[in-house]
Image 1 (cartoon, rainbow, N blue to C red):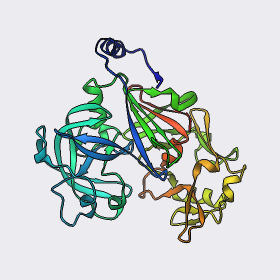
Image 2 (cartoon, rainbow, N blue to C red; image 1 turned 90 degrees about the horizontal axis):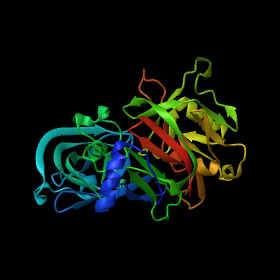
Image 3 (cartoon, one colour; image 1 turned 180 degrees about the horizontal axis):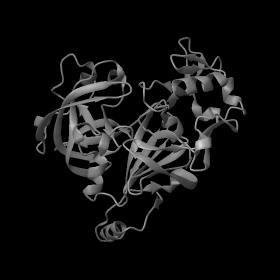
Length: 367
């Protein structure tokens, strides 16, 4: 694995440690790919280690897993791995109440502290949530047990220090960044790769284009404009140089945006919109050459062909069905428009989340 390095004082120190002690300064977490919709990997918590499957989410900041103390009515908990604090010699009680609401799914519980191992990185004194109640169906059907937030501490529930902050502050990696490669093949092994502390240059081609962050809550930045077949969709106000607020979110499967805007685009592509989802009458969209969608970021066009943004599945009768990977997002009244570049985009473009330089980077992924 070829790794991109930045000449920082820490890198020189870590290089000396690497030479003297055989320290690997980057660590990669293989990811499972469930139908290009869920990408999740393995971590352990406690001593001896207890195994969990977690979804790495750049759209939230907390780590949580189901608790062995969950309610008997919590189906999601009892159908997934549970953390048992009494079985860990390194467990430290906290007990603060904890609750988090996602775009889909919610949970409540309490905080605990223990050793957490992520991609071979042994993180000391990591505070995390033990989920006691997980109402609804979202986490019942999920293949993963919990979620590991990789966004900023400013949006962390209960002001808990996120996993990535502890990885960096405890000196476990060389560079203050992590990067995602997501496979488009649900049968591939691995189905993706999350690299901590470096960039895997074997997973992309060409140059990485970096976009400065405008928000240190989510991974937020400005999108210059969006295009269909080379023509501006006029989502962003170019006359006032007003960019569209956009976030890169590994925890969102699709590309999302304001309902009216995305529904209009899906209809223009020939899809029928049902509950803010674009469903094509057949799969001829895959062969169209006049339906490329491009997002302009820091002056560079990032183009998605229909094969990139159309999800292929089967209907109830087993017939091929094609669904748009762009979905309308209902925002509360008074909130500014928000665009989300989720897994549909990140699987096409290798993504670098650079804490140290307050930027995100994208390059053409190798599939």
